[in-house]
Image (tube, rainbow, N blue to C red; front, side, top):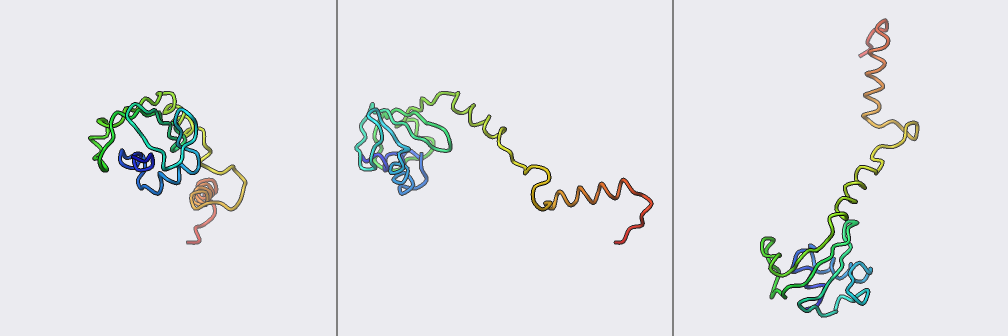
Length: 130
C-alpha cells in the first residue's frame, strides 16, 4: 500500500491529498530519509510523521484494506512517540504571546472597555454622557 494512502487509512491525515502534500513537503520520513507519496509500506516499517509541531513515531503492524475506524487504528499502527514531544507542545502553547504588546496599534474592543471602565471608576465627579 502507498504511504499516503496508509497514513490516510490509519487516520493520521483527514484526506489523502493532505497526506500526499505532507510527503511532498518532506514531513514524512522512513529509515532512509524523506519518502515520496508512492512509497510502499510493509509491516515492521517505522515511519516518522511531522504534524502539528510533533514528530510522531509509528510502527506499522499490519496493512488495512481500507480506511479504518478510530477504535481499530491500534490494530494496524503502534504509536511510539515519546511523551516529551507532547510536553513540548504544551510548553509552546503557554510560551506563545497570545496578546499584543501594550501600546502597539489601536485598542481592541476589550481594551476599549477596560479603558472606559477605568475612567468611570477613577473620576466620579464627571457626569455620564450616555
